[in-house]
Structure formats: structure tokens, C-alpha cells
Length: 190
Image 1 (cartoon, rainbow, N blue to C red):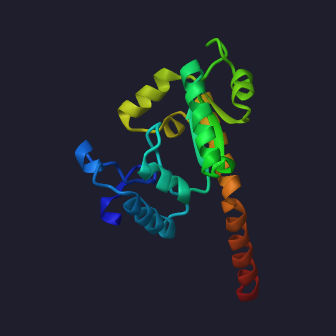
Image 2: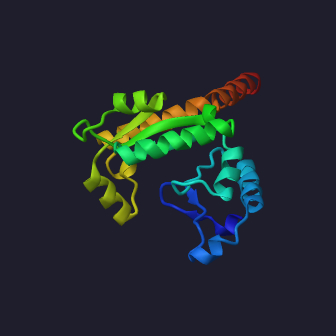
Image 3: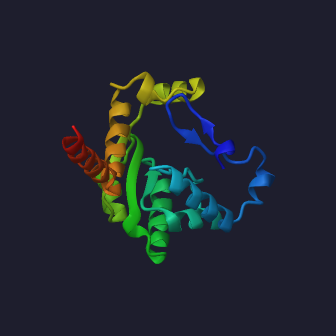
């Protein structure tokens, strides 16, 4: 699988979707499960960016996920679709994995975070402020804005969400335990 991963200057590796849509149709839920099992053995984090609808392949990925970030914008159709998505996750016993993230959050859109939380009866875990110019420029240049503009509000918001994900996986605790063991070994050997 390593030969299909594309490295990025930021240090991450990406397994892109097939170039042609008809090839994507050949991927089965079992393929997804097998690929994810391999990736989990070799990487601390595996992030899956799925389309905003549920397919059998997405549901397979969902089954193997420890967390699900549901990204939404502040508009009525998206709130309605998110309500349906949360109901589906609940019926599949995955709602406990879900975290709601507001993308392009802004207070002047006619809806706000409180409206969404009340409508969905679900707490918003994170918000990414609207900064279309920076985000689109970042995508077009292929350089993540968290690297090109680390002090921007949008970067700080993504950092907070990243911290939330890391905290919930227990990775920081595992890393500290490894460091403590190395430190203890160093005391004996040093």
C-alpha cells in the first residue's frame, strides 16, 4: 500500500481516491476494511475524508473509526441533513463517536452555533471561522494554511480541533508513558 501513498511536504501521506469515478465503483467495503487495517498498523492516525453522504464503503470506514468529525456549515439545508446523519449514526450505534464541527462559522449568517446545538440537540465540539480567501489560496497553492499562516484565526481553530482529536485518542498519554519509560531506562543506563 505504501507505493500508493503520496507524501506531502507537511509530513503527511495521502491515499487519494481513484482518478476516474468508474474505478471508485470497484472498491468494496471489504477493500476499505483491509486498507484501513493495514494503515492502522503503520500510522498513529488515519484520517478519512468521505463525501457528505453515506455509502457502503463509508459505513465500513465508520465501523473502524474511533472518532467521527461531522463537518457542517451554518445553513438550514445542512442543519436538516446533519439531523438525519445524527439519527443514522444513532441507529448504527456510532453517535457516541461523533463530534460536530462548524466550518466557515460566522455570526452574521442568520444562524449561529446555539441555534444549531438547539436544533440538533448536540454540542458543537469545534468551530473554524470563515476565511475563504486564505483557505482557497492554500488549496490552490497546495500549502496548508496552518503551515503558511500558523497564527491566523482559522489555523488556531484547526489546531484546537486537532488537540481535541489527539486528546480523545489517548495518543498524548501513550506518548508520555513511552517518554517516561525511556527516561527511566536512561536513568539506569546513564
